Length: 316
Image 1 (spheres, rainbow, N blue to C red):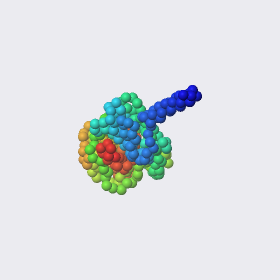
Image 2: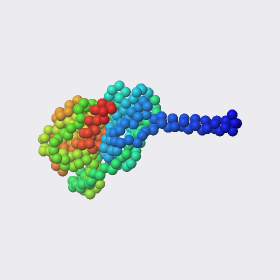
Image 3: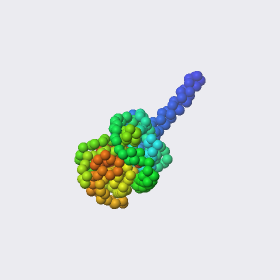
Image 4: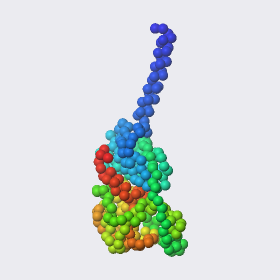
């Protein structure tokens, strides 16, 4: 063979082999995924990940369904926007998780990191969309809008301590067996996410929905779970908070009376109290909220997302 041809052939082989290896590594990388639509699954070998929705609004929860074929790639935790989330095993090699997009989350592509048992990190991308929830202005007594009394400030500080303990009591499991339902079939007075101004002072966005109701109207639990908090708070008045597992909590605020105690297991539809006007309010109503790992999400949207948490993996 001509030495020049042999030399050129060896050069071609040297170029081809590294290029082929580079392509193989790229396609088999755990952080590689195709561009997919809402709810589509992204596969990389022994792992299948589905996100619902793939393009959430600010203030919305995202349900993650994972199927793994090897225990070494089972998910241990998820990370999104600086928060860490747990997963719940729902079958052999099947897991569910729920993450929350804060109301002030940055818009656009955001990485969702899935930490596996073998310490690898698989990355998927969410596209956060703007949630436009509006604003409202309310007038309240000065001490309720902006408390300065030492006694009130002490109570507020104590309330925060009690709530931290309550919100730290969840476990990596799903405590409810039926999708969430509205606690009251009534008019929504104030929707989720609305920016509030109290006596012209800007406050945090509304973390739930306010439902119209007469004082004394029975309030049922939106889903099954364990009572994490039951008592009176300065701002929220008489309050009940139910732990539904996976750091999902439902809140029932401004109650007139409370019918359950901390640690009690409640079923969906069980009466947990009655509508009232306690705490920082302008009239009787029920404030109903959903909190996921410390972040408020739209309760109406979460009714849909709770169904996804209960569906078998692969049937999203």
